[in-house]
Length: 201
Image (tube, rainbow, N blue to C red; front, side):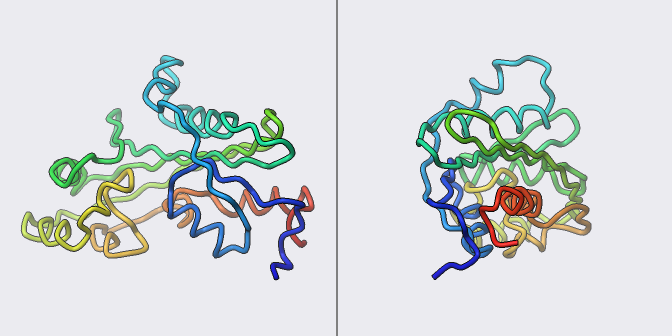
């Protein structure tokens, strides 16, 4: 029995991300997964000049508001990777992941992560946070070895890496909250849930 959670019903996660679901479970937050059906590229283009951080927040908000589940708290989240003015999405294939990692190696990029909680069609909480990561100048041989080890997992995250796994070997420096890098700013979310008496304080 979960004694931490005080809500009448589980949180609703409007995301397909297995990583975000694992984070919530590990933190003792019961939830159901109901991915929001939105066209992310169309949403991003709907507000010109928004910027990377603003785009991440808009996507998180759109996901949270896309689900209408009476009385439930719906969590939307999004993460965008930026190298200067260049933005990256999840690579569609191993070849796309290879090309993306070749661009990122030896460079410092940013991960912009945002979350939104809604209830009954109204935004009740939003938070955005960023992290900076520098990839080392790894060899082509190492890159192929990495792709062999990760297989289809390289298409499941925006950077083609999972820092909690062998992806950590791609980096020489990481500045930022670990959970932001994993795609869910957890501490601010927990603080809000405690404030709303949804978690034991």
